[in-house]
Length: 280
Image (cartoon, rainbow, N blue to C red):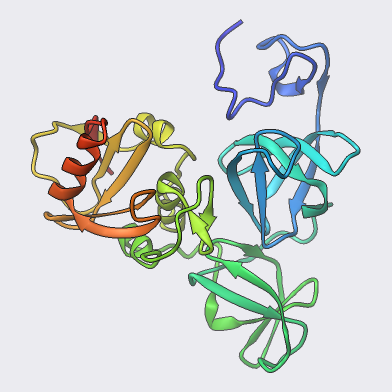
């Protein structure tokens, strides 16, 4: 059998996705059941426990194919967008409703139970959450489930940002969160993925996947330009201009802008050399 990356391959010795039959070894294969993420954001964990490491997050409106429900509050499956595999809380999933029409186009917005900003917010939704909008009511967009959101904070699914670096810059100051990809916290590869996705560029989840899949390699001594991606083992940063970069990182515990020269020297001093530069 061929080797597959377990992060994006729904296969275990006891269970695997039906589409992998004949490609991987497993005791049982299943078609799975398509579900929709109904929570504003949902953890995708390495094991079925709230104490397990956070591998990534799913956003409201994303699809998730469930291959196992363990009956104890956790479902194992695969995200439809980037293909990531893991365990998600069962309560974050529902049967798919109306197809999403719009997405959150600002860093964060609030949803209300009615057409008034004086009502207590029901949900806080991050950039990239997807919604099925049923109608417009004044300055509000009303979802098929009856939530009211500021219409100016939404964009149609087909409308893309024109500059992914500008998207990344919105996250400056947002806390660093391993596995995160929302305005409440995100990691280095989450920042890259969210920014590129908002700009209509497909992007895998983890930095090593991004290094392998994105752009064209340029030599390390080349002059970098805005939008280039700098890769270290386990880390990625976005070139902001000839002198600065932007990255979510554990040193600042936030998304930060810093001089490229300083960041390269600091990370090298910590034991990690710049490995590659990719041009999108």
